[in-house]
Amino acid sequence: MASRCLVHSRRMLPSQVFAVDGPLAKTAVKGCAGSTERQPSKAMPTPMLAFAGLALRLHRRGQPKFCSVGQPRGEARGEALGEDRVRMKAEKAQLAVVKQHMQEKADDWNLSMEDIGAAAQLMVSDGQSMPTELDEQGIMLLFLYAKGVLRQKASAVRRAEFAALLLPDDIYEESLERLERLVLEREKSESLLDDSNSFTRLLDSLPSWRGNSSYVAFRDDPRISCGLLERVQLSGLCYMHAPVVLQAYLVAMQAGSPTGTSKMLDLADYIRKYRTAQELEDHIFKDEAGSSQAFLAQILANASGLEGFDCRSMVNKIVGQATIDVIISNLKEFGPALVSGFMVTENFLDAKIHQHLGQDNSNEVGLHAMVLVGHRKKSGQDRFLLQDWWSDKSFIEVDAEYLAGQRASLVFVQSDQPDIPVQFSRNSARHVELEMTVK
Image (tube, rainbow, N blue to C red; front, side, top):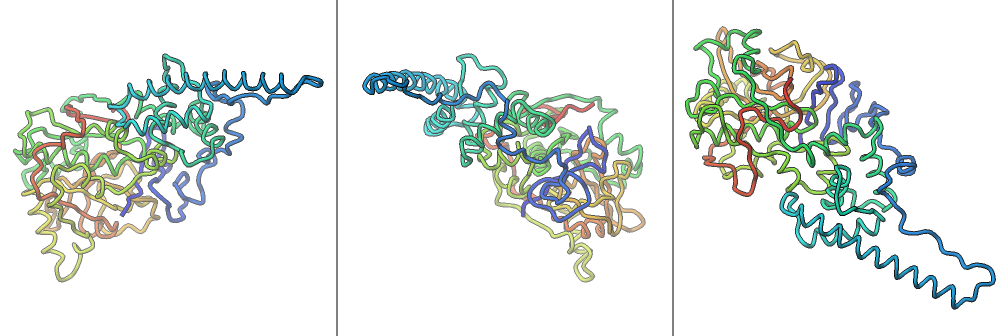
């Protein structure tokens, strides 16, 4: 099931978090994708409004040709044919320039010769002009055409939306930022001092996780020698962040990575190379996400050993405790687990609250993906530690009743993960953020 991944922006108040990844149920939270209360600033402009006066790059293929009064028909036809030859020669030259640029990006963007031929032809037929030396806007425009984004739209609509995206007003500002992170900025890495990481900050508010009575996988499992791996989410990519971090922990368990480093899938590179045109359009223009379980299966070296748990079974009167015991055992044997389809409610958006227990009857706002990394007992009750990607809420303590109420699923990877598949690029850094640098 696709998960409507929530994003917690550094520029927004918690109440302004907007949900992405497909249509949402009606909600009072502004900015939710698919919501009846979408913010006007997020609305996609009409093609003609977006196109008006924008982007010197976007040229019409030619001007109407008229015969002068009294001009002989043969001369007029000759002049028209001459103009057509000039135009065709210019288009042929432009096609060669576009193909050359795309061929230079073929490895980085995973383009076949068929992709390049079709994309270059579409770009030239749209009247787009590419210089021999590309600036940043030119590179981004080239990427959009090369990957087939908006290919199914009419030419005028496609040119208008690309123009509005690359020379944005407040409507497309965040869309342009997402495109820039993919194509220009790439992955960013920033190491943090050990005494100021997000887990250390959690211990200030929940000191019970310090003691020997608690178990935290990245701290207590000697196989995870890389220690804590952190990411920070700005747009709707929680469905990718969670599997990427989980995979990194699992690979570290097998590979025995040196302390302080771990192999982690290069998420920006993966999106550039392997996301479909529709998925790129959904991410760039709409900030929509996808299924964390499906993405996890796509990136694992061996996806044959996935075991899932519906968290609602944890509160079943007959098998509830037995299910919890299996989950705890799996956490220690197989390592952290993916938390998928977690229903976020308004109370969860409060960045000051790091402990959520029992039932939460506040309004639902979207789905989220995290990683289960810890367990402890509190007066005989089981408590679980979830790792998150929001800069002000990186860890959350929950109980079985809360997990069940949020209708989350847990997925353990029981098969060995000796490495990240060779076709995927990877980073080697302790703290890696695609979305933003930690402040």
